[in-house]
Image (cartoon, rainbow, N blue to C red):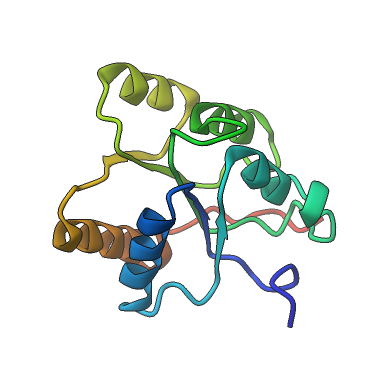
Length: 152
């Protein structure tokens, strides 16, 4: 079955392969990575979310349960991805969690002004990073009650 037809629970937007791998390993340890799509830049994230480019075969209404978004991305930065997601009624309700190495007050403030659901600084230590990602996955996929998207 093609990933384009599968339900996607997590969209991981991360350009750093090491951070992406650590995130996926931490989620797999709790069986939370079965329906994960990893994109490596902001332009690819927008293509996926809005069903354009390489992802033109999917429907925009098939939204991920949560987006894990890095801020420092090539092509289109994370702030612009967040801005576009929260500005479009088709994607506005998708929970977006910024998972970034930036702990700058300006970035935190701007993300919340744009409608981010959570802002988390990436821990430097592997064990702490794995714990944080696992807890994120458990919260957003198991504990959190997502909005019901209207069927069109």
